[in-house]
Image (tube, rainbow, N blue to C red):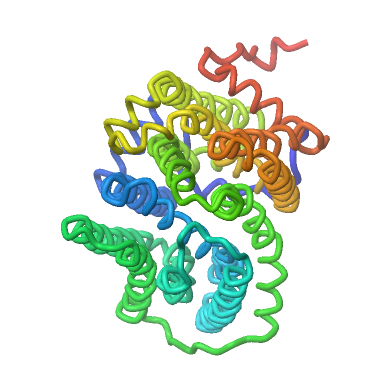
Length: 471
């Protein structure tokens, strides 16, 4: 592996130093508990708490929602939410992490950056809502879903303009505010869903609760910004900055569409080709149980990322050894869950969701293995970003989406939810590891994937002789 240009390296001072694995854990948690952790690490820790906390709460309450609605009504619920998220990449407009650079680089123009990003987000949300509604009305069959239900679910778009403030709090190492707002909105939405379960509420009520979470998050972030910022709030739309943000956001937006297609096309086509809310409900339940444990390897990746970036700035070889080690640990965890869900899918579905969902066992047995490639996708982010290969990631996502869409058209009419599960595994394997092996620029990453899948990173590191003894 060749050394990269020094200009692409992350400053060594940005992340605290790292020695042995034991020292990592001890010093990291000691500093956090003592309140003296490096701001970058502390910021990443708060972000990880927010994401993992919201995911865990959503999964826990979601299980009871699934049990309450049953296969048919839950199929309609999941189908509507899939349609509501269809134009989500357009609504988000790829604006997110790229604004952090502008906020950090030009603090005097924060108002212009935030105003421009928010204005673009408002316009993109309006276009996304119109396109989604038009596509829904033109599609025909909808697994018992109604236009009114879709409109309720799309109310979540009202909160997305406020989410442009997340990069502002990240840039100022105030991720604690994001965590408080995110977990607070998730708790309120979860309480509403629990109330709906107790009174046997209709599908529309749970869709409203889902939309409420995003709306509350956007509003609470705006309130926190107005109450905590001390800089002049000179918000103004900047046309040249808007053009720059659009160009930077394009690959992320296109990649987001591609990822959405190979994540959600299964649900859309199950509803359209079979017109069966029951099949959609079974497949959605299989997906929920299949991914309910993924927050564990996500926590490992989130915690290790700051230290990986520190190594990336100093030593390529050491960075890749640690990346292999982290990925192997995550995949070892995944193998355990995948084997259990493959051997006992019916029993687990019966315990978690009830006897009505036992028929989802064949789909669960297959779909759970797609998580192996999801973990690889998450773990490779630092490698991709450090080499400026965002467009390669976008092209791979488009490849996976195309494979998934084409295969689904053929297998869903005959094999239903099980066929959709197989296409998901195949498409994710092709987009994550297969496509990386084809390109010379990413072939080393594909090799690292294969070594991690065989858990090579769990063994002792290879002996490195002192430089004086090398030939």
